[in-house]
Image 1 (spheres, rainbow, N blue to C red):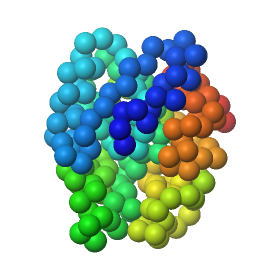
Image 2 (image 1 turned 90 degrees about the vertical axis):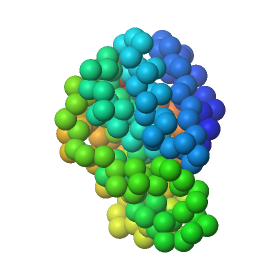
Image 3 (image 1 turned 60 degrees about the vertical axis):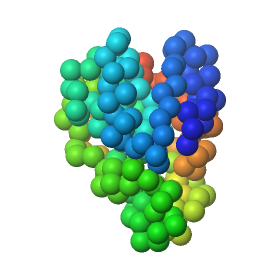
Image 4 (image 1 turned 120 degrees about the vertical axis):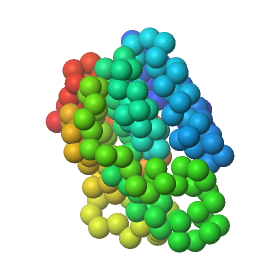
Length: 191
């Protein structure tokens, strides 16, 4: 998704007193090999918190894994398949769909290792099953149409919450914004 997809969410964070900057990258053409070093370079400039959607959460945690000294206090992942994506695995079985994953395929398919970094990580998952991912993944249990709630549960995160939103709907969910603000300010969600 283009960086502009985070614009609404960023505007709501700005209204809460944060100063968001949108980090955009080409997930298909460049993938994590280009995005992760660029993010590390950006984050090294000053202390920051991160709010990332889907693959963005994987990119953020990979950057923090590769550069644990970065001055990042908290990370909020929105619908990120941190333990790997069943939908991505399903897409890889069909060549035309696999091309849509591009160079991000491996990270999406396998996810990241359990979290052991300094930054506190909170995960917001959606449970409104609207999306094409269900056709490719055959989810067992709750999902947001693209990512299963179980795929967002990574060992070592500080907190996890499920909200009423689809995968793309997380980007426009007032409840997801409120939960992100709670985590950024207090290090926990409002349960």
